[in-house]
Length: 72
Image (tube, rainbow, N blue to C red):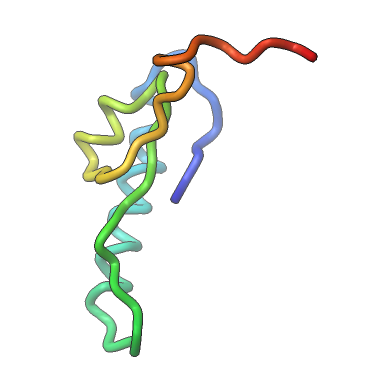
């Protein structure tokens, strides 16, 4: 799972998503007992399209569904 720095332009997050995908593939290629790299969790409401393009299998889109968080 990754949460890149905030960018006004979702393209700014692309290098972070790409690097996590590469790291995930490297780990998956290693013979590590009881380790499976089936999911790649990255992307939130503001950048999920880019995350999916870079290989995300899970995204977090809570504020797109429920709206912005309210200050308490």
